[in-house]
Length: 95
Image 1 (spheres, rainbow, N blue to C red):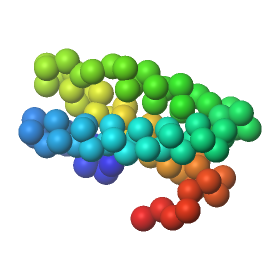
Image 2 (cartoon, rainbow, N blue to C red; image 1 turned 180 degrees about the vertical axis):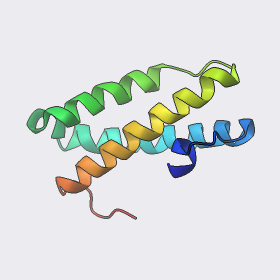
Image 3 (cartoon, helix red, strand yellow; image 1 turned 120 degrees about the vertical axis):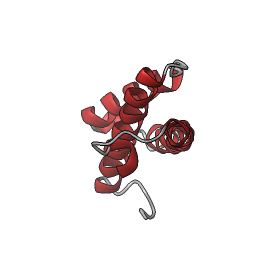
Image 4 (cartoon, rainbow, N blue to C red; image 1 turned 90 degrees about the horizontal axis):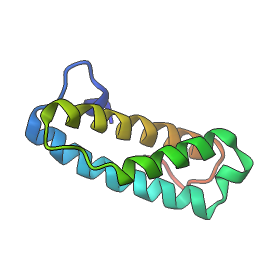
């Protein structure tokens, strides 16, 4: 996530690879949040779940100028959701 959120944007090929990887991780976190019904007990988690679903539907355009902002949004939501689920003790381990 740090590479995606760094002040210096990643190279084009790296951005494509990171986006695919982070989208997969965000999908896993989304599944955990939904299965644990975290959004029903935590409004912020509900907001993150909604945003994660929106990002899953949005495919970044082939334009590099749009790919990095999308990557950063995915990374930010994944990081926030990971932190929130860990704080709520809804994850077994966090590496």
